[in-house]
Image (cartoon, rainbow over all chains, first blue to last red):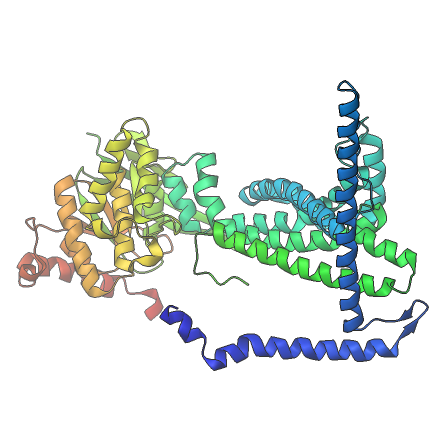
Length: 318
Length: 264
């Protein structure tokens, strides 16, 4: 172990970095357990931490069972086809997809996929637009009112419009993506455009005047100017925007999936709510925690990406 | 005869909400090829404005700047600027900072290999070979300023413009940098315009010292011609009569004829 690592493992440091959060989590679990036991709903008692953990294990079992069923299905199909070919080498064989219902964990991946698609489309629009409006005062004045008006619009207001537009425009015999996926992704895009756009514009417009003078004296062309001076100096602000955008996108996605019936976490929550079994509240609680933890992981991921991209490794990133 | 660099009756007016502010009024100066000229004056007298107009970063309201028969109306690498606070790109190493300038100026004139040698040559000139691949936040203030000078020199400018290049440095580093600058200027024979606050620096380095009156409507007050042999040695000059005459003239101008408005 290097010496510096030893230094940081002093008892006081351990106490601070592990013990304090541990106590805080324990404390909130206790409050949760106590208050849950006080509330009775039509679907039974609000589940405490232990019940929720039980539900989580149930979901894992369900997932594994479903995977086994799927494997068995494909195995049966392969055997059937092999027999058919044995009897008649020219026989037509059909390969069918397994159509079991998606498990909780399948839904997590659908949600992550949807949020990434929406977020990436949003960023691909927002970053260039932000750079252009940060560089030109005229563009900024043109874009600013539009941004200010659309920024506060709730995803729930966009959703019906997006749904109708997608149904009208996205028509194909063999669609690559389901409509619900496209609707959710576009709704995410519409809501996570703004923080990146605004932060990029602010970052670009607040570049050090001296560096702009350097660029002028060197007579850098527009492209080199953006690549060598504008982008590196606004990377921190762009990433601040991206992190805000991703967390907004993740929040918006759950709501969008509930209403668009995209097979993700939002739909899971909605289905459980409609289902109304005695397990439902516990399963929803699992979903809530998973949504929170994934949101946290996404943010950390962006932070690591920022570290990788930023030239200033010494900057404090939170 | 046309002079090398002519700052021709330059005036600069900044519009402000409370009416126009006349920063410069009729600044007129002719500079020869290879001449080292210092601009000295109290804060706010428009020295930087003059320099920025020559650099092309600002436009004169009336009058103009003519360099070798061409009017200056935009910034360009033939009038390289050494900025007050080095202005290196913090995300590039010393080498890359110079490289950015060299690539821009010698794009189709030098091969990749020649460019590399030229960059290294210029960094060597300012004694920065040992820290070529360090980023600005890893080197000292004096080193940053040297890289800034190397970047400017690497553009092979017709005129080198320096805005208080050593203002932010400690006295020892500054003396060292002044010696390097004299050495380099001796070799390359660039035309240099340098802004300074430091009387000794002005006398040591310059062929002429241009002293500016206080603003508003600042203009050239007096010009002192420094008639000293080069190369100059700061220790020998301490007892030199010409050196002391020039020094006295500048001090008298700054502290008697043009007292700092802040002191009144």
